[in-house]
Length: 224
Ligand SMILES: [Fe+2]
Image 1 (cartoon, rainbow, N blue to C red):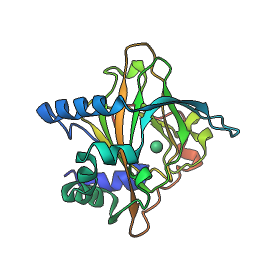
Image 2 (image 1 turned 45 degrees about the vertical axis):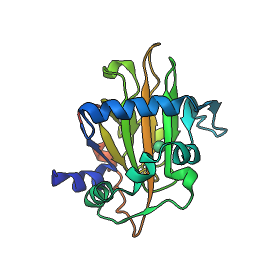
Image 3 (image 1 turned 30 degrees about the vertical axis):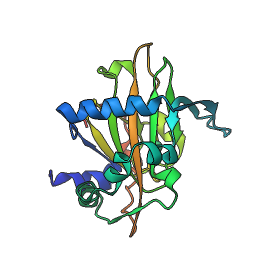
Image 4 (image 1 turned 135 degrees about the vertical axis):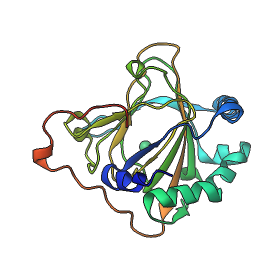
């Protein structure tokens, strides 16, 4: 593994893991997520807060996934995966106490679909991408603000963007780094992710806030 991943995770609260699922396994992942998607509940609402963060997507909850896709709980507990998360984050993972919160399938599948600004309920979120727009210009990008919890930071100079391809994964410091997924720009695009949430057995090093003097201009948005 790239030894710089832990430093990057500590610094940014995010690391990209390109191409963790490939070939036939990626095909199987995509057909499984399509199968589960038939059970998805559509969510179209705006979180009732000042920041008015929108949710426009379909989701399949952890309970349904646990009952209908036993490979997901197996993946969640997989020793190789939890060791990878430990190597990147520096902490031992623990299961999220509530099954509903352990895994969720999020499907953006209509033009304008978006997962608005939020924090996750647990410190470590491992996200596996089954579908994603091939061009960053088509939306479906992860936007995140290292060291920031408030949604306004996503519109500021500290915000970063990451593009992911099918088979990519990323680890996010979900409860401490505000993040969102940008709207799909046109019909026919999809962004399907399986998000696995973990507790930590010890405190996760908190990403440092970017000093004010380092905030001149928006950083290069892609390629991380
Ligand atoms: Fe999230």
